[in-house]
Image (tube, rainbow, N blue to C red):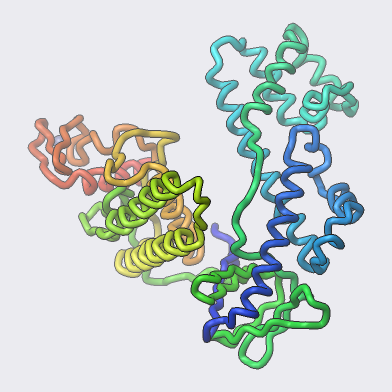
Length: 434
Ligand SMILES: [Zn+2]
């Protein structure tokens, strides 16, 4: 059963443009916030710092002692959030690094099953993993010691440890951010009043006032995103919301998620048919921006205008995606949605018009939003086995042919849109599994 509450980000907007003097004060915070994050990345992002980042008290204490806060003159309400923000990024980076290494271990044919078992074991036990990275003596609790003796028996430990360190060095990326686009703010550093919000700034006892379009008040850590070019801010507030239950959402549907069209259902309904236009506009802008940037690099052009333009296009794309997901759910009224599992990495269905990195990253966005909206409305989203889902005939199960977005089956004569056929298969597979 889905849980009864769910975390969601709501946004607040300024009612009128922020005066330049005030915006500059917010930019100062964002700039220092970035400086702190980069400092933390630099100092704690490396292999040797791994033992310090969980649970993070060491970092917090060392950062206090570093003198950075005083030298920036950044209020501590911002300083420590920046530290923890960066620490969060470092932790994510480690999670990603580990999963990349696991993949390498899986695919490395020079490793025996015992080798793999050993490597997986030491990666899971953080004590082992840290000791190996720091080339220190292992100290395990008695309970684990016994298991570990079995796991390490008969493997060339030294070689495998070296292999692991090499993999970490290869996959652990150095982190850095150039973005001066916002900062987190703790509830001690703001106050809602006068149809707006007062934010603490670097000057003592001074506040910047932002008139807001709504009168909602939150008492949580917020994130303030700034758009200096437009004189705008967007405040992100995480809220717990009760999950909605729709009595009349009873259908089970199959969904094909596409590159050109966002969704096609098993009954052939189409949602998000302008999806690729929005993506195209964004990827063209990114592409042209990159060319221009490379050409003028020695002149060191500012990227402010470019960034603002990219954000605008991305925002438009995201608004469109969200509206279309909402429309789909409202119209289809599903209790259960079956959709094919996303392939790990696939070259199939790539739209050549659209820069593949933009494409990949937006595809993740569609999935995440669909996931979130289904959770909010107690709709079950179930992934089904995706192999051959678009090649198999949904009427008779034979392997058919695809061409010009049409699926045709020689065995039974079926002829229908390729995506609709895939969606029908998703529904069929989903219902067969329960
Ligand atoms: Zn058929």
